[in-house]
Length: 109
Length: 120
Image (cartoon, rainbow over all chains, first blue to last red; front, side, top):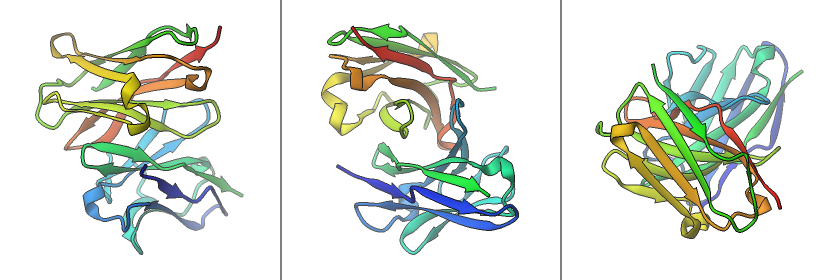
């Protein structure tokens, strides 16, 4: 059973920078896992932010960026805004199937 | 404009079979690289991927639920159907369908979700 691990929770100050990570139980995450990132606020469907490691959707704010960092996928928020408080999920690709991470609850305080 | 909408029962009894339909517009499931997936989210818990069907009829399932899931597509009706057998109260969740494509990655577009409660 493949497990994708994220930080359960992180706190950041408004205007600050925070990096969320996404690790695979199978080993180092590479571009071949096509990391995707999603933001979800209470009562809403998830919103896609990043696909294929670094690519932004047309609606993704510029302060969000994706990368690979130390064998993990990473989502960095620079210049955090109060409205960025949300749950963030990563998704990794495993040869046709996909797995979501457990989510990171980001608090802006 | 891509849209997806889930439909199905809001309440099912334990041991019954759940059938959910995803009706979509703005894309074709016969286009190379396109897929539709089902994802669920138990109340207060994380997203769980359940199944994916690709344009070429390749089907993938969550390993732990594979024996209970079937995903099918009707390209002419722009529909994807997910069936889950032997429903249990632990299957109570909001069920989402979502779009996948080479050009936008996995699940760029989502339905609003439908809450399914399993209770006698």
